[in-house]
Amino acid sequence: MGAVTPPKQDRSRATRQRLLASAVACLAERGWAGSTVSVVAEHAGVSRGAAQHHFPTREDLFTGAVEYVAEERSAALRALPVQGRAEVVAALVDLYTGPLFRAALQLWVAASNEAQLRPRVTELEARVGRETHRIAVELLRADETRPGVRETVQGLLDMARGLGLANLLTDDTARRGRVVEQWAALLDDVLD
Amino acid sequence: MGAVTPPKQDRSRATRQRLLASAVACLAERGWAGSTVSVVAEHAGVSRGAAQHHFPTREDLFTGAVEYVAEERSAALRALPVQGRAEVVAALVDLYTGPLFRAALQLWVAASNEAQLRPRVTELEARVGRETHRIAVELLRADETRPGVRETVQGLLDMARGLGLANLLTDDTARRGRVVEQWAALLDDVLD
View 1 (cartoon, rainbow over the protein chains, first blue to last red):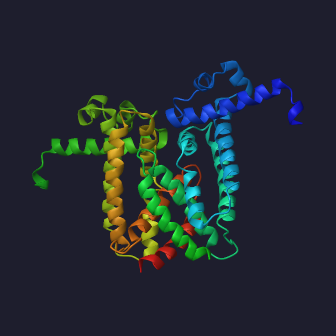
View 2 (view 1 turned 90 degrees about the horizontal axis):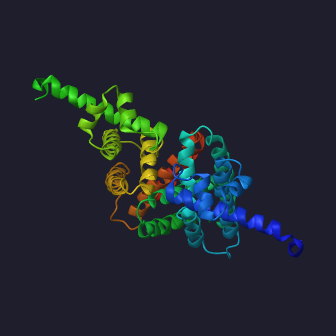
View 3 (view 1 turned 90 degrees about the vertical axis):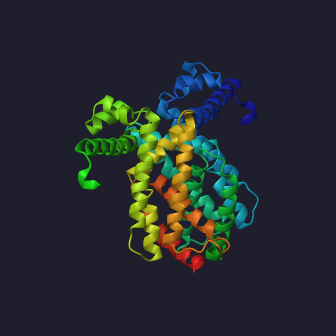
């Protein structure tokens, strides 16, 4: 159908994606308190009315944005060529160090204090978490029928999340590289 | 000197500690945006003027509060009777699941968007992080002169931080228990 899609629909889709990308950027840079629908619309070069047409509420816009970017990153991760464990661990950890993680973190922390946001973000976090776990199991070629393997992969993803947090205020790249190298080696012992 | 300390000094010290405890509670429950000096003073049952006498700025109050509680928890951790590795790992992970971690997380995330707060919190995080690492090495009886041991302990604390994040919106106790059990066993293999 691609070639015959009316231009209007294309434009609408492009506007939507620009809004989602801007929402993640604003959330990462300014936090929840500084990220209103108006701020995102301006960042995206879209009118406030157009923004509200796509996303009726602030919650719709920001949970939608984190989910969209998470899905994009999952797809990119799945498309990685088959690699060694150390590279896979590094790629998984990288999921938690960029603007997406910063944006998601802002959203999680805001949700912990805002009743309106909380159920939406809780549900989103569970969904994205399950998907990331599935991808990790696949890429690591982990056999979850063996005792302890599931918990090992979960702990690895928890560590990745903690490494993301450690990178929030300072550039933690060098230390993170050494931790990842060591833990990838530990993982090899368990998974093989 | 304890018995002859003037009552006025005692009262001042008690007021200070009440303010610090209230600051942590407010930060954990309401986030940075909802935690002003006035809110904390009211929570502590202290006048705003008295609060400002102890803590001239909002940054002083909240970084002071997180540091104070972190020190209290470090002292409690050091005072633990000598235990097995699994118990030590569980105790370390517990550092990241209570109101202190919630408060610290709010402060970190706020600092990532607020230039005024950022250097203070970055410095505080580094200090608390070093101290926690020192305690972990001690309690785990880890020999950091052996290759990989330092990075293993660091990764464990990163995992603990990530587990704290996973507990922010939902009660993650059951899953966390299984992850801790598995990783404590892996740790034993590396450290012995």
